[in-house]
Image (cartoon, rainbow, N blue to C red; front, side, top):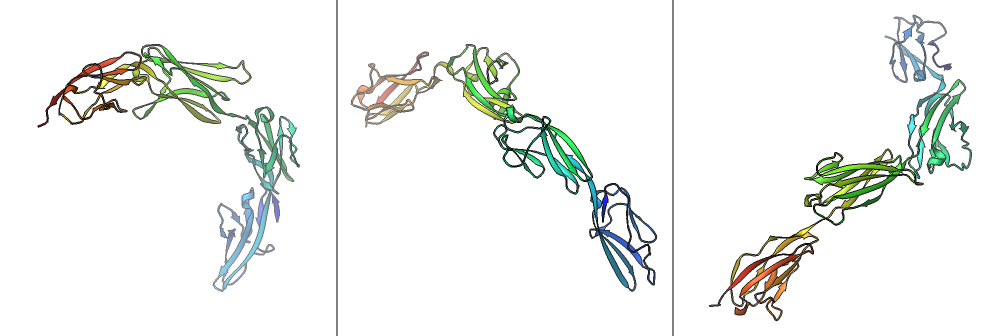
Length: 375
């Protein structure tokens, strides 16, 4: 039996004849082999009355009468017809440029509705090849290669069957993933100067930008002006492709500002980031000087360490008592700046000087090498 949605439904076990038997049987109705899930009226003659039937009332009904002598059952299949209805369609949908996308339109009704799609008041022809890259999967509309100029607009999903139709609209905006197109500035700046790093990014809509850096394993967003720096932003829409710039300006850049900064760009389509290294130049500093005095036996090998830091990285130079180092290849300087003197001789005694130079300012320190004769 087929009935329209929202009508009252009565299911009779027999033609107006109540169940009979001796002793008098009990009667039970089941729906899809489970107890009835909502309140229903069962008349004295066994008729099941369902008010305001919906599609959820469709299915198999079983009437069973039982007494001590046994039980008997009869089945009836009910399909409730219902008007086409759109159950779910997002108000806004955001395909990504170049990425296959599906516009959602979930419908219900019996018979199951046919679905048409419209864009900006014009019906989308979905039979065969579509030049705009549209196709349909089920009731949903697929855009093969979304592009803002071809696919932005107001879309209408219309569902229809023999019992009525329904329509809803969704606004489609094709978005571009954000792209950081340039990061620059403060690549080699002297401490104490004003310096700016600039991030340029594109996307549709223009992405929200922020400069970020790591401090003790925590991510810091540089967004509040303070005594160290200030942040400024501007949009450029006069070009064919609009872009946004975010500038982080250090008022007096210091060595502690030298680190990796990340330009973070984010819009509804996604997010990305690009790293930029800030280098602050400062004069060479000898941080691990040699010991004041070394006492070693003749013929031994002596290693004198001298570590320095600076930006750019300093070059370590050594000079001996007479301005030169021991001859015959007995003195070398390794990659860490340490002086190595092999097969020490009496005339190697004297003052050795370690110098660190990075073209900012040369720094030097001295040490003495006192030799102890072999026994």
